Length: 628
Image 1 (cartoon, rainbow, N blue to C red):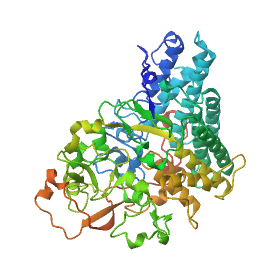
Image 2 (cartoon, helix red, strand yellow; image 1 turned 90 degrees about the vertical axis):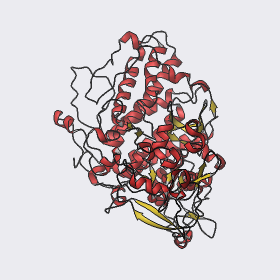
Image 3 (cartoon, helix red, strand yellow; image 1 turned 45 degrees about the horizontal axis):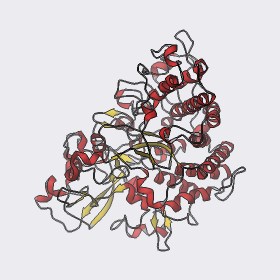
């Protein structure tokens, strides 16, 4: 773990404030700063660029994109990972099919911002692009700058430009090239590129970043993107470019399969990144015993783990409201309003992704008879599951935290339990249906008012991890297999097969190598979904794989669990909040039920986001995405 002060994040020179970019039609080139202000010296230009790293204002905090009514919204609620029980969660507008831009969808859909609470992911990317383009275009104006300083500035700027551009095109598809600043009199009406054309330009930025960036930074600057970060981002962006959705031009949305040549390029890039990681002084794949600590850091000057290749530490003053509203049920957070109903409740769909150990000691998908799941799914469905399941998800009746007297607390999301009753009657849920589960991947037992009060919420900090080491192995597994069609083949220029890369992650997780007779494409996609669960990947994965239509077909595609206690009668005490969670119930029957308040409306046109209608109308050459 790195221990140091985050001095570089706080390098914000007096007066260096960057104006918000409402959308890419905002052409102002100066952001209110004079040339002398920005290009005075190395520190002034670095401080101008470091505005990007402040507190999730431009970079996205993946656990919650925007502040919205005391909480934050995540794309996990658009996929099949989470189901919100909050009535006015903005994701519900999107899931109902309302994808045309408005304030309620701006956490993810659209390119505009409405003040501090609605900064869409795309509008943030445009702001970031304007900042880094100013750095790239004007670095030679800086006097008294060393060659090393210049390379470090440009390396970061090219990395960030590629990253922000990627954030745009993975949502919209191919876009114009944003490689310069425009003045008010410039003609901004130029045509879109295809995704492949956009990707080709983005790769030139990543090549420059790899050339200019150091292999690592001094401890006091760790967290800036380095050469390994750029290598990992290159592999990731090439894998996206090889994916089925990205093979389309601007006029079609069809599943054309993978681009095999690009998949091979992605495999070679992933191999280079893996080689750099395995020879690095700091980066590594953390071992099985360390798994729980990958996502949790004590609230101190410890903030980085050796798996983090590209990340943002969000400097939040008080985690209480955030943690409560994101993941906790009412008995744990002691709130009766918006913060008493979790926005992000894991679904049965997510639970079903975890494999189960069969009688031969090997782990299989639960649909495989060798897993033995069918024999226990109504009586003991969580037994012998992938260890990551117990790391990530709480089940009905599971112990979590204690009260002030040291009495254990148990999750009461079972039928007739306190949490179920609260969620079904709370004014902020309006009868929304619970899934029965609670996410614990990013929270800690002490984050519970009955035990520690508000202090318990401050014991740890959350980190937005964009790329970590395990993802690079998973990128390698997918790219290599899709380039060759053979999990044991080795792509030219590589030393690792798809199976070897996948097994690296499986063995670390404690589930052993992939057994025979399991479809490899299904295996790597399941492994990716489990390893990176709730980390902001699956929504984009199911779109680029073009499987979202199948996942969300039917009226109620999102599932939950109804756990019914066996031979149990509730006492008056068990219906009181101060007593309800202290009763241990262990025997249940389980029924898997549709979550009728968690709709998913997804059609072919939804694979790409719609461009803002007013901008399409205003610009002759700006082509709208198909179906919109």
